[in-house]
Length: 365
Image 1 (tube, one colour):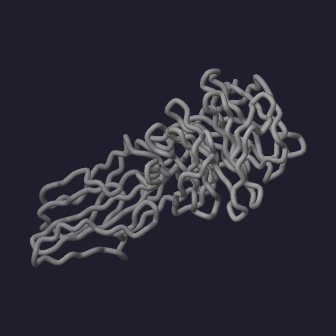
Image 2: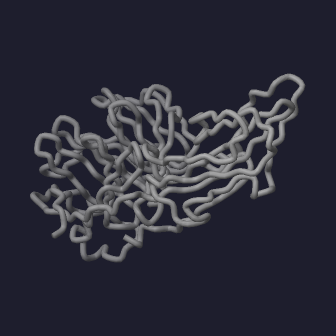
């Protein structure tokens, strides 16, 4: 789907830069009395000989690296994304890098050559698209229920046949317990007016609710809605879900953040790409059977993501669910994904929609 592609660049850069664009410290194993040389401006030291420089790289490609340095190296160390992957003895000037088993998106390679009197290192950054074309799916409605048309839906989940909903907008944000069949709000907690509520997720006997730009999340007791603690994070908060080990959070970019649920610290991150490029505007998330279902903000589509690699496996067209009065609307869009495990169906709605849909996803013929 071309509408998901927001630009693709293959970036070859020299200097110490990590895949998130932040400066990365060089590995230091310097022997006493030696000097260290960090190349930062000359692009000829490290390059890609094959595939052709600056072409579009794909997950699974074999990349031939070459570098031009002094001829008296004792050894060279190959690093990828901050991890050592090989050490080559002697005066090596090339290496064959496999991208199998990695993920899509940004990667960086560092070559460190060790000499008797010095150490030289150079970095190269590249990006990988997915090696598959996503399967195309549509929504089959199996039931529909009333939904509060004033609710600016930001997040949904089902726990023990009970629907929980997080809503947004300054002065209107809330956490709700909702009767699925009637749409009645059984319990509600309003957020302070200065917060714009975002996604929600169940974790153990708690509910975690994000806020948009305040970089603060709230942890509640699931039964009483009592506030237990506040947590902080360094980005916008958009969607959140729990995979049984990590909290997975989106921030409106193409990046998923894997967080430790105990202290909310970042464990790792993974970009999300299809075969054409990155999928920006990732929003509400739902983790189901090892896969991540994600709303793409301002579209009527849901994508299905392989969390280990960031590949988009499926794209689900939900446009037929959009109310007529909101077709073409860039605000009151599809948002909210909840999985009913007992029925193996999904509950979907949108911002200020008057209907909650129960659907199954079917492959497009």
